[in-house]
Length: 160
Image (tube, rainbow, N blue to C red; front, side, top):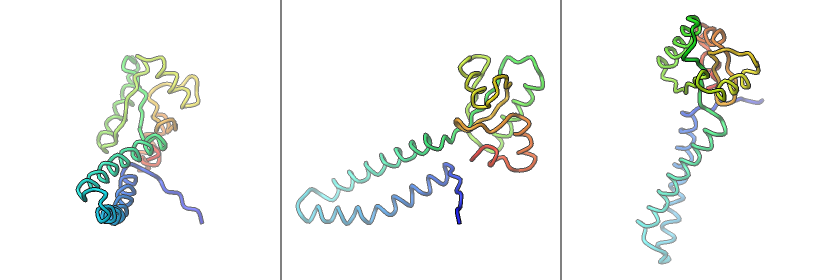
């Protein structure tokens, strides 16, 4: 039986917390051994352990963010004269803001690189905004976004 687990920032934070809770008893065993053998004070080793624990926590979080690309990107155009595109962009922002989902907006009208990236991710050399991606994974266009909202499958759509 194979089970798929969707990793999101909350789950990663919980996994890190479990990891560090398991490390603390080991840390105190090591500290007591070192201090018994004259290798420094317990306060010194506790400070060292806390520093490396915090450092490794941030490294793990960073690596998970990079590995799992958990950042929603919305490709919009701020200078579009098409009212339908503007309404679609506004609805995407309204829904994401309402659900407190963090996202980044890339204005393709101000960046040829942004437009090229949007079209590359969408797999369509003529794709128009708005388009939504999670890192380098294409989620879909406005129609797919709207359908996911209606079907209450937004998290799956956004690959969260």
